[in-house]
View 1 (tube, rainbow, N blue to C red):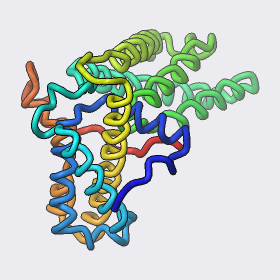
View 2: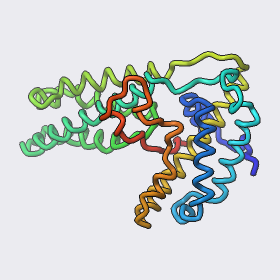
View 3: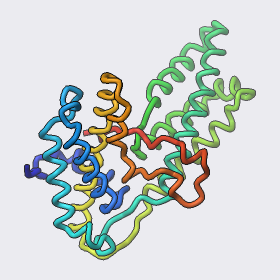
Length: 269
């Protein structure tokens, strides 16, 4: 089933290209192949949970496009950005900083609420709004960076800074500010290879679409696994080709190797 790239909205196209820049075509091809193999075995179980036969056919078409481009034969000849260790570390650090800031703000909100002071109410509302907006960014670096900005803005409120003086507020502010800067720097890093801008953009688009589809399949599989009581179903759709276990990366520790891969949202359209 051919995929008509012209049907994509400008925003969706830009989102997929942006996501695709974070991944090497060789990795997305390997993941597409692995996910399609899992779909051959378990695709019917995913149908009631959102991943359709049409989705599978689109993924197969995109896999074929990468193979036709020679990605499986000589990825070094493809003008393509690759996911770097710095980028993966920046994503991980950003999520840890977000977790810290949310914990600090939750406790500050509790303290301000207990004081029962009318002057505190607008700040309490700001904190609650920030917490609601920063629950999850999945694997989207742009969303995560914006969430860190939101948390930093609230942490800078004078009343919040005062209440957080003995609750780690300053450290949380420093960490989210640093993490946001590092994340944006890592996300804009590029690996320059041979190829025209048009070829690079097309591969980025295909890679982004593949990443979106395999993430969707993974989501559906996890829900299906819970519903059917079958952990093996979720395991079959692991995204180990685009998110390799940390034990395989340079300098990874045993504890790091046990970490789960990032969650898998689709881009905003």
